[in-house]
Length: 419
Image 1 (cartoon, helix red, strand yellow):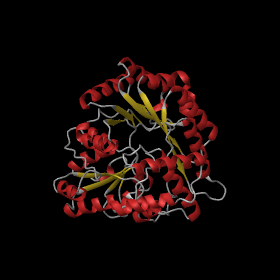
Image 2 (image 1 turned 30 degrees about the vertical axis):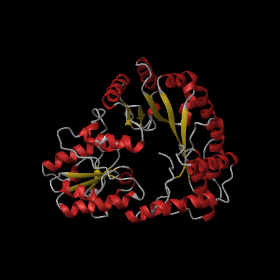
Image 3 (image 1 turned 135 degrees about the vertical axis):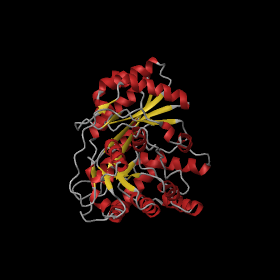
Image 4 (image 1 turned 60 degrees about the vertical axis):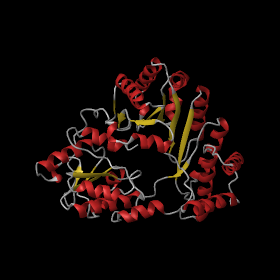
């Protein structure tokens, strides 16, 4: 769920906010054009990668429909490289970091006829460095889920699972803030009753930053009978530091799974210790491995495959998707197209790219939910055997499956590479 947009929309109290989710809109550009004619500001959340092209198309369409419309980009890419966004010619300003305060201030400035260049936290073309945004004084207001088409999200994921964020920032910085546990529990209960939820997924960047708060949330959900299932993100060291009691409390309170990002070269001992503790507590886990292209000194893919196989052997409920790490940063003068092309480009070493594609495919198929057709069961069985043996070469089966999918649907078979 687009929790970033939900937070922004909920923050703009008194404004008429419309969230357009391009995944569900049949014609997102047409919808944006329709709204742009009477809109005050178009905010676009932009991630580094192929999605840059879509953000550019949508913004250009809005600019054509309403030349006076203010267009503000925010999210990971504008924060990383605002220059490439502003050079596109269709972006009036970029919000750096969390965008709640800058966007609210931008709306106030636009209504008063003032320049966006005077809004703290925004970068504008030829405007010099952004004015520093004031540190957040409060947490965001309660999320207004009526801004989203929740039923479409439930249908697409096949479960009434709601994404929820209870904190902002990370413990490594100085701006981490968490909602009090009593409010988190109360909101989770109310949302579960209103939307008939089966599960809540805590999408916090750093859910375990305050372990006392985690214990209080788990205890509160346990006091409610532990009937509401939940998942959360964690680091491998969070699991190891938690200890058996905290993990057991989480499981008893309804925690079903922890999502663990494993960036760079994994520390095998740490991962196995985390896996053993989760297995002992009866908790499932999704270890998402991020691997960069081998450079002759370091082969992160080989280490990720070995660790992923060991975790799968430890507990059959563990999922271990493997995905590419973000491509190296292009030059300072690169365009948005350069960024998108770099994200889509295969690894320079064809042999390493083939190994990554094979490992990604077979781990995903081995851990995919069984389908209804005999062919799906057979493919999953073959993938399970390959993962167990660590043998991914001579992958005629992968080629046949992908060719069949392309002939049947007109596009390549989608391989999930993690959250």
